[in-house]
Image 1 (tube, rainbow, N blue to C red):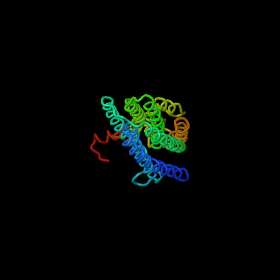
Image 2: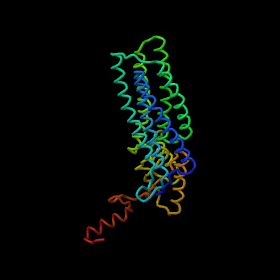
Image 3: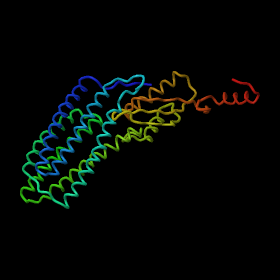
Image 4: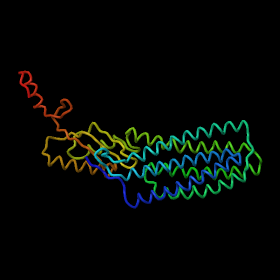
Length: 318
């Protein structure tokens, strides 16, 4: 078994610095947006406050996940903490789905009972939000190498677009006096949140349930392995994600009854194919010799099985 160390060094430190700055800036903006939303009677701004609060939680979870991912593997966590970030991304996305449902419900209610809003306050606060979210999204893009940080980037990129839409909505209300623009805008923001979150939920669930990695075909892997000289059959094949950037494989490979030195060469070729063509670095390959059978989960020669059966018939114990 191979144990891979978690990422450490300058890259991880830079990521933590970016996340720390993002946390402070996002929390400050949440407070400003919430107060402004109450004063302006704007559901769109209150939606932005809720959305940005979820972003704060998302960034906080990502920060904690990055910390855990830098911890090395040990005897109790032999794969390290690679899935800490995956779990954080799943919680983030699930929270956003709940928030989008709440925003949608409130928006539909306001369509039936419009509330007068203050568009100038909306536009001023939203303009500050576009700048802040845009800067944070750009910083996260530079370090978003796994699903955890990618989910945080999607949060902030979505915020940048939705906050820009609030500016447009405020301008529309200012020019036309139509207050229904505010809840309609909130519905659009909720739809954006939902769309970006469902993809992350699906990807993280697939990883947590040890599904086959996205874009990986077991048929192609099996065919490529069986194309290696000396391989007769590949079965009991499993491929799963350790984290969002690493995969593992386990399988049984049938080969001829050859010396261990020759089977070692086959193993090297198999690992070469899996590493270079499918980016799978953690592999567990069990060789089985042709002409062997399976007895209680153990592979033994057919002659030995027959011999055991014969001795058993005569009452000899082994």
